[in-house]
Each structure stands twice: as structure tokens, then as C-alpha cells.
Length: 270
Image (cartoon, rainbow, N blue to C red):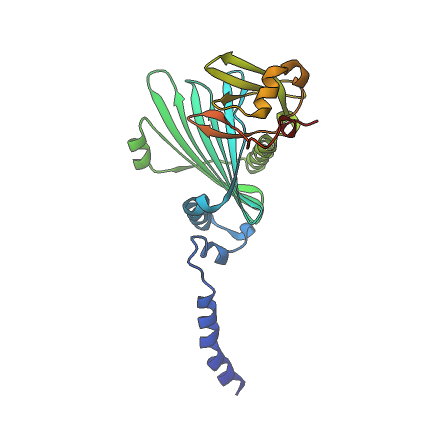
């Protein structure tokens, strides 16, 4: 009788399990093993599915930070308050442009994808690399390169030797730096420096508070009470942290004015 009961119950269990599935792009991901047990195929599927649904995630974006010839900005994507993706765009002038994407599952970093264009003299070289992590350890790195985008897509990846501990530590350090950049903390705590430029194209200039290593400029296409206050008495506010909104377009941070009812004092850390 016990065996018969199990047989009768099994179809209902299967039907119930099927009904749990969602039409959301990440429905299959929820059925995957834990991050500590994921293999290369599962990780790649997870990342591809995440890319397809990322427009529905909550997005945070950093300022564009400049240090010498190097500049970068970062984006953070969250579902239900948990980070699922960090993305960074780096620009070293004509030498090298890089985009890296860090994928997370259950708060664990599981994949790093990097694409870069590097000028090596005669012509640019395009490079892709993919690092797979499990339990905070890199278990596989693949790489490919070509002289054009079409050639790159046709070129298969090949495996590279890995230094698991060193690579994993480096990626986690990069993640911490990007989170600091987005939250404007530690070396990315930015304060008001000046408003520069011609009358028809002005920029709000910010510098890092601690050692002034990083600088960030924000194009002022529209003004509000905060900008009026900064322009009227810039020396009064120099070195002060200010709260502002911006968007990024064509590799330029652009100031987003607040509503007219919000006074300039609301934008200042005073």
C-alpha cells in the first residue's frame, strides 16, 4: 500500500513542480545548483539569461572618474536588493578601451567577461577573455583575439593557465573598488572644486576628498538653484560634498537639475 501511495502521489508532485516555473527569463536559473556547484555551462547560461533581463533590474551608475590618461565609470544592477551584475567601462585614450562585466549569484562572483580594443601599432587588436569562478576560486579562463569584430566572433576561445588564488583575489579587489566608485566612498569620496568652461559650455568639477587623485567633470546643460549657488560663491563651497543627479551619454556625465522647489541648500552636505 505504501508503494501504491507513492506512485499515486508522484504525478501530482511533477505537476506541482511544473506549475512553479515562471515565464521570467531567469526562471530556469532559479533551478540551477548553488553557486558553489556551478559548472562552465551553467554559469554561461546564467550570464546570458541575466543579460537578456537586465533592463528590468534596478540600476545605479557612478560618475566618470579621471586619473591622468585613464578614465572609467561603473554600473551596478540589482534584483530585490541583491547585486547581480557590475559593469565597468575603461578608457585609456588611443591605447586601450575595456569593458568588464562581473556576474554574481547568491552574493558570489561566478563570472568575469572582459572585452578590449588595444592599439598595438599597425592596427587595433580586439580581445575577449572569460573567467569562471566557483566558491571564490577561478577554475577556468578562456581567451581569444582578432583584428576585427567579424574575425573575433568567428574565433574560438582557448583555455589559459590559471593562478586561481591570485586571479580570484584580483577580481574581488576590483569589485570592491567599483562599489566604492558607485557609492562615492573611500578614495572616491568627491567634493566640489570649481565650475569651469566657456559661457556656453560649463562643467562642474569634483575632486576626491582624501588625496585629490581622481577628478570628475559633469557637463552643465541646465541650471537650478544648486548650480546658481555654486556659481555665485564657489569659494564658500569648495571642498564640500554636494548631492547631485547625472546621466551618462556619449562618455560624458551630464547634470540633471532638480525640481525648482528644491533649494540649493538641499544639494549641499551642510
